[in-house]
Image (cartoon, rainbow, N blue to C red):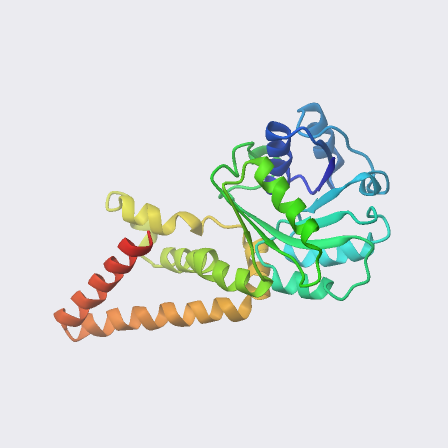
Length: 275
């Protein structure tokens, strides 16, 4: 099978490396910067590069790895190039906006939204890893009318690549869960290090500072698009977080040790139960 990776940045090149490491499929690759594509061939990350006009018609499965706002325009622009009955997917961290914009398009191929759940605080081809998706989840968000065998084919490829878990769900459920498990953590970390005390943490910080602040290392351009494109679920999570912070604030201000203890015991109990 021919698998095309469009966009050879951190995620795209890591997908290519994972395919080469764990499968026998032919890996085609394209990047807007041609020198990156050439390096990927030289490094053995992909088997072949070329123009989109050459590569897209050969692909049985195509992964589009762009920032959120670029994915739909790219697919629509090149819709006549994709192989008939092939699978086109993406790797974006939000799904509803992309899937609903593409759902009513008349394609000769099948678009299935996907999210290989892994990342790093750094970006670009040079930081890609063949192990990035070890122990990671691969989430698929097919349309209601997507044939089961097409979804099974994409899930099967993810399993063949070595993803530890595969999940099939709706775009909307994906986005509300990602708002909680990922996006709100980045909002919290950035808010945390905006404190005027943050520059003076050296000598006073240990594991707690490191754990909470880690994901403040962020690609602001990409995450701005992700946050805005997932506005409603993320705002709900921010509202919940602010509400819980205010409960702590009022308990401390009022020196209500019982309420404060109850909040922490509840938090501890939930963490112990859910991991």
